Amino acid sequence: MCYGTDQGNSRNLGVAMEIDSSKREEKPRPRLKPINRQQLVMRPTDVEQLVSEDHEVRAIWEFVGRLDLGRYYEGMEVVEGEAGRPALDPRLMISLWIYGYSKGVSSGREISRLCAYDPAYQWLTGLEGVNHHSLSDFRVRHKEALDELFTQVLGLLSAEGLVTLERVMHDGTKVKAYASADTFRREQRVRAHLEVARQQVDRMGDPRTAEEVSPRVAKARERAAREKQQRLEEALRELEKIRASKSSSEGKQEARVSLSDPESRVMKQGGGGGYGPSYNMQVSTDAGHKIIVGVGVTQAGADYEELQDAERRIEDNLGRPAEQLVVDGGFVSRDNILAMIARGVELIGPLEDGMAQSAGQMKRRGVDEAFYPDKF
Image (tube, rainbow, N blue to C red; front, top):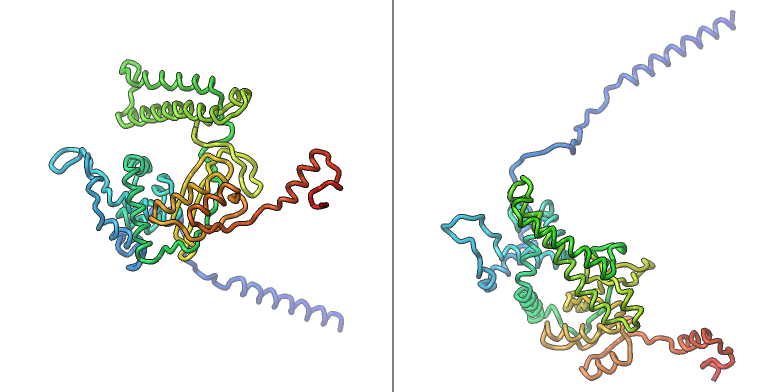
């Protein structure tokens, strides 16, 4: 009997636990608002509220508006009272480029992409998109005027005491080109591609071979074909430069150039990145306020050949040389040291270990260690 009673109590206890468990399971779940990112939303936007009152993009817009921009409006074909799509305001284009440079953005394609979602760029454009072709064409068309304008901006910063040139930090960095290693071709292949491109451009000008496409598509195709032809013609010119820089006849025969980015050169990348199509960007920065005072892009793989040009750029931009120029070991050479002394610039940089270099040369030549320079 006792056993039966204990078993019955256990059974009753189990039923009670099941009831309590079912009650816990039936407890209402919290109702949460779902997040739907797969939807299109139409809502009013106050453009002025996209950036704060003290945002730097507002200062750039006001500053550019006070400059004399008359030369940028000359030659505009679209005028008031005549048909045609309105042209983009040069003040907007200049502001976009200056703001982009201030944020380290130097690509028209990237600025165009940022105009679609970045609040500062959206404020400048008034939520309108700007095609990257328009940005790049404006930069190329007004290159000299824009370079002068950017120099004036730098001079204004110097006049306000934001650039002192007491100490300038200079360094070079390899920037990967918009090309891959397999785009490099010899002269014969480049000329063959160029002939095909010319034939394609000629066919586009013949209405008998034209497809039934819209004028916009036809114009885009024609532009793409002409740009390809221009790149190939540029590739031939760059090929001649590469040949001229080669010393041996074998090197001249093996000269190659990229079809997609002819001005790029194969360089060693930093950080163990191997070799690839690149440009060598030289940047000089005022140490006081971290303001860039000189920028140059070269095709040279070594840095030591670029220091004197970098110092001249600083003087051209600000009207006076730097007092101190701080560099790494890649810029220190006898010629650079003498050139900086002649210009009154104090060059600060590490000297290479001559003993170690000489020892390496001795070892490669099979000289016994007893005759190394450090033994004397």
